[in-house]
Image 1 (tube, rainbow, N blue to C red):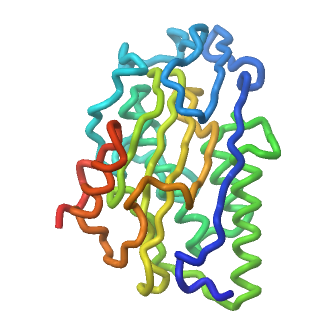
Image 2 (image 1 turned 90 degrees about the vertical axis):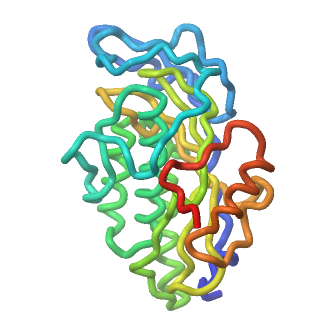
Length: 273
């Protein structure tokens, strides 16, 4: 099968994995903090999870997990000026706030998905990039982000070779065409964010690809790091798929956000045409 239509692309589902703790405990500053992480969308983090004073710069807030709605975030924003990941594009160095977590999740989705489908990185470079985003938080787990995404990169390149379908250098993911929802967030500790992002059609033709990306983040070494990543290409919110216009029209986005229910929020730089 030549993958010339992203609607025919094989379904991806990175296993949903849960840590009872991250390596037992994360040593942050002078204290050890045990973080219970999951992707189930719970709005109530464990009571014992909390950042030490040394790990939390002055940007920390007291935003409660159930009070993270209403964030206004531009896709591509955030990070420290001049600080980027090894792909040369993804910003690093976020504020330890819920807004910073959404910015990080959004930029990590774009960086990972662009890396999978663009010809810029080889397998070694892609693995190094994902490893940098996790900063060792997955502990080398077989179902962690580094292992699963690296395996996906390898299988994707093998499929390209098998079917003789060239990689599209203009393939690009656009979170600003979609929306985000904060499933849970404790500033300076942990966050779980879902991002719906659209992809330009293959070689400029066909349907606009789309996926919902479940991103779990942990505050570690003064930045939001990738703790879990799941890509879902089916079971999406009603009305998300079936778009052929690029960029995705605003009325399409507004319709599915309204149908998806409370919490879903469009980015401030979403195209309104």
